[in-house]
Amino acid sequence: MADDTVGKDVSPQSPGKGSEVGTPRNQRPGEDQREKGFLSELFAPVAGFGVSFSTMFRKVATEEYPEKPRPTAPRFHGRHQLNRYPDGLEKCIGCELCAWACPADAILVEGADNDDTPLEQAGKGRFSPGERYGRVYQINYLRCIFCGLCIEACPTRALTMTNFYELADNDRGKLIFTKDQLLAPLQGGMLTPPFPMSDGLEERDYYQGKVSEPTAAQRAFVDARDARDGDEDDAYADGPGNVGASVPGVHDLVHSSHPTAAETREGANP
Image 1 (cartoon, rainbow, N blue to C red):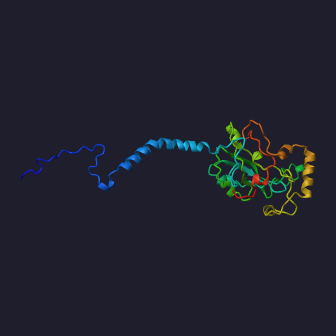
Image 2: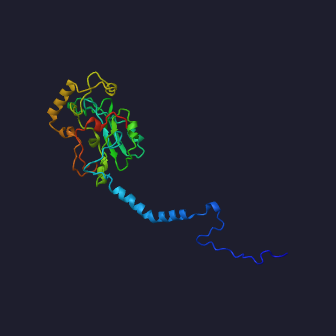
């Protein structure tokens, strides 16, 4: 059989620059396309610098913290607060449901019984409506993840979360907040526990909002107690206190002793 390649150039063409071997005719680059590619490669660095120059004249979004702290959202989950009823009694009943609901095991609660025995007979007094109150309440903010499950578990709306978020400290022990730090300060007209409930009312009446202010009998009881005991409870009544202390459970942060309702968000959803 005769070889039909005799006399023909069968050497493979090198696919060098500009080679169009194997490329369809309608896909072969023209001179205008090659020129556009060259210009794009030439001005690509300039385009990158253009982005930089355009951002140089925009308003800087730097937040001047802590001089000008940014306001938080209305439903922000910040430091916890133990709330009071309008007469000054505590809402916490020491049920420990918040501690059971905490997924990080950051809450410690120890309840105790309210004592209606007269103080002259070594009675401990009443700190909340009902049978019990939270004698010990601690939150370890080294563990707390601010999930809000403790707020959902509280049956009396005693525990809420404020908008306060500045919890950093240089001592791990100071991030274990105790009851005196978490308890809401006394608002105008409130009395300092312990003192009896309003006459003729039960714990359910307190929860349903039937108490708006202390009664005359409660004021007389507190005045007689303070006159007998002196001014021992003044520091407790003035607010969180404990500023500058260096023992575990106490912090150096200064809190407002008279927050507004918007700051405490008492009764609001978490």
